[in-house]
Length: 401
Image 1 (cartoon, rainbow, N blue to C red):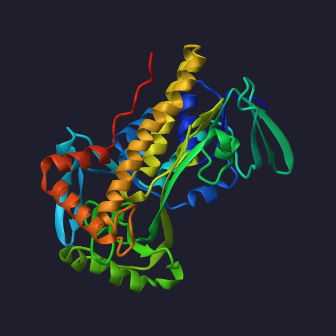
Image 2 (tube, rainbow, N blue to C red):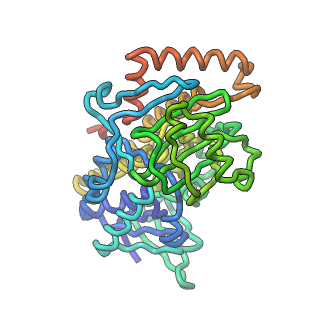
Image 3 (cartoon, rainbow, N blue to C red):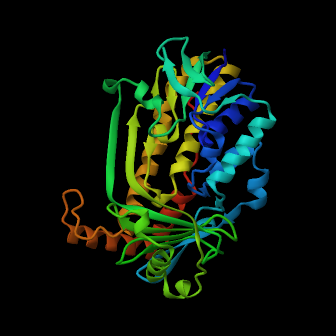
């Protein structure tokens, strides 16, 4: 079995890369260890940067996103009850974000791939990249009880934090950076109208909260909780009661509650693997980096990796320039570290660290620094512009000539 690009992982980054490559006539096969239904069951992010939305349009899979996605010109930050508006469109020269769930993007990409007759192996077991430092890499896997070897020119590892791709890079050839945060996010999804037309990030003495949405009839809410908490500790009633305490009073008064469709606790971490390339293997998205969700950067950083790798593969095959592959890691990591810093910064400003020490700083001093930081950025137009420019996403970097 042969293809030009083997893609490991059928999440949104793998599917988007496959669709873009196919548009350029570059053959690709996707290998995914779980079922398609399982992939669609992952409840994840829903805020798409301007660049990501444009990339989906370039892939020709934007019809439903453009029809059903909710374009947001701004969002709010509530600091201890006082509401501040971040005017994304006004502060960035017209840029916006699109609220459209990751599940929806994934479904659209799956449908487009099936309609185009492109090959995906779901429930592919024992996936293993081989000879990635050579000119003839391959991927072995088992499917429906049969063993296969997929010969290819390049391998895109889009298989997430726990996937095989990053582990293929020898431990002495990679450096991993990590920070684990001392709290998690308890998320609740419900078929209730959003409490506000825009997202609200809430800093409160009881802990952080986020009022988000998936559509005009489906809402997603989050609460900062200790890592020791378990989902079963939180009834729906307890969640709604605590959320009301952390939301601004006028918003809480109009909150529509209802039974949860899904409820889960996600730990927060910052993680980066360097380099993001080893021979002809490229790491994409969560395989190389994880961000806390405070800055809405996880899925968007994966998209910028895809954009860079797509440009590189297009030049390799259209311009016969295989040397350009050496640019991938440096270009991708510049944007990754910027997104990591922004997400870390937003997390520090908006969460309650209580009596926990932060770095070499005692808790009381850190709290005062973050309060001053937030006060400046929210009450200065230049400060709000910094937040807005980062939130809509920095431009995708072009390849060097």
